[in-house]
Image (cartoon, rainbow over all chains, first blue to last red; front, side, top):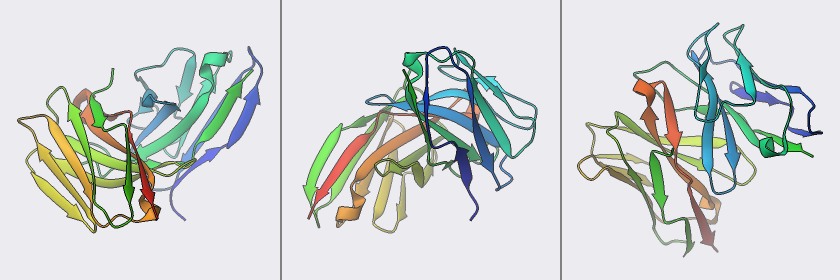
Length: 114
Length: 111
């Protein structure tokens, strides 16, 4: 089925470790996004991309890096994990603006940093 | 900073009743969206309403937009237990390149 796939679904990291979260979409969407969701905070934008080879910072980019080498993939990297990065991470994709048809979200990655 | 803010934070109703959630925002928008999130799942897009529209319907959902008051409402009619979820409004930002989500309303529909 068409959609957004996130891997892994769960991960536990030790403080200081690094990891990469992978997001893949097969809908030929131009825009892709990484959000984090914390209790009572809603979703906060980490980084986003408006096309292959482009990335931009969102509201909470510190401690994260991203890459969009292929149109269908958007990678989120944590260079040195901190307990404050314990969260649920969601990837989303959409068609380009100014006609957004809504985001399609992945099912999330639950990350715990101990 | 959050652009949209949903109200109430939590809502509990009986099956068959209507549920109304509100969203207020601070700056002018071009589009506003509503999403649903079931526990432990990703968000699902419900409705997008443009700034030149006042009302949209989709099944049992009705969304209104009042740009003069910078507010929107989501009405779910004849609610079902399956409507139990969190509901988020999202407003466009950064010239439409991304949307900003509010903290959400947790709806519980009791059988």
